[in-house]
Amino acid sequence: MAPVSLARYDVGMPRWQHIFLAITALLLAGALLVVAVPATIVNTATLKYALRRFGGDYRPSASELSLRVTSAGLFTKRVVLEARDLCVDEFHGAAKGCLPILKLDAVVRLGAGAPVSVRHLERLVVLAGELNFDSTKVLPSKRAPGLFPAWAAGMSLGTVDVRIPKAVLTSSTSITTAGLSASFFSLSTAPLTAELYAVVKGTDSGPGRRWDAELTLDSDLFRRGRLTSLDAAARARAEGGFSAAAAAKLEKSDETVRGTFDAFAANAQGGFRLAALEGCRIEAPDADCRVKLQPAPSGPGDGPKPKALTGAASLRDGKAVIRIDPSPGYGGFTAALDRKSAASAIAAFLRWFEDPRAARR
Image 1 (cartoon, one colour):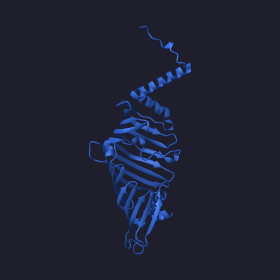
Image 2 (tube, one colour):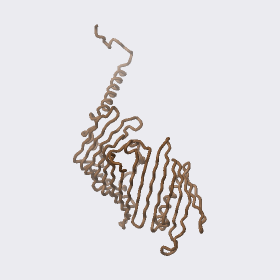
Image 3 (cartoon, one colour):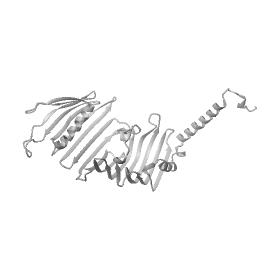
Image 4 (cartoon, helix red, strand yellow):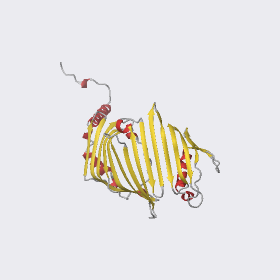
């Protein structure tokens, strides 16, 4: 049989349309090649180029840098990043520091909703030197990041080992020196644990105040990549006799989150010696709690201990209702607040709880 020549078939398309279709086909073929074999374009060489080209004023550098991307499926990729002495030195002084060791091993998924989502964080190892950040030399961001980014939703964990012994954060009103360590191992039954310290002092070089906190967090999200249970506990203490603790247990079933929550804060010097939310029952987005407040003695010295105030708090349809029951010498009150007013009232109460004189100023 004689070969068939496609040139004999004229479909009536202008020449520019033939060229457009050919270019489109080449672009699609290139995109499929990148998706199927990402190492052709995403590799150590392109990463080094991107740091040089787009690092800008942050002037990133590293003594060793390696990036490997392999395919676990058409839209599922494994990304392995390793760096030694990864440093930034922002030209204006906004950020300066080094990570002697950075190791990241993650499985990511390409998709339409979130272009890239992390499905499993197999390993994260971060060992930091001293880090310095100065917010007075940073342009304000136009968009604040979300509390839990979409790319991390449904992410399970393997090994997490983060050690940041010292980070200095400078703002227009304070200088904070902080440190963080966090660890998690999926092969162990232990929860994710984190420890944090912070020393906060004013820019007048006066004495600072040290805060320490510990957190434990356990969830099937870390091991299975789906959130149906959460068990969290946190404790904090500060110089001057301040301490606080909170614990929550949540479970999700039939698209409803239910659980319990308890929290207290105690202060040896504030307007209240104790403030607590007890026996909270949560059926998101609603909650009901018992409230307990222990006022500080009003006379000189410790004085006689005033009777504790008790009441209840509830959250319904985005509105908070707080009720303090009457007691001898006190008539009680009830307040209904919307979300914004409740946040402002809580912030004001915490300032007064810590130091009534500072709150009046």
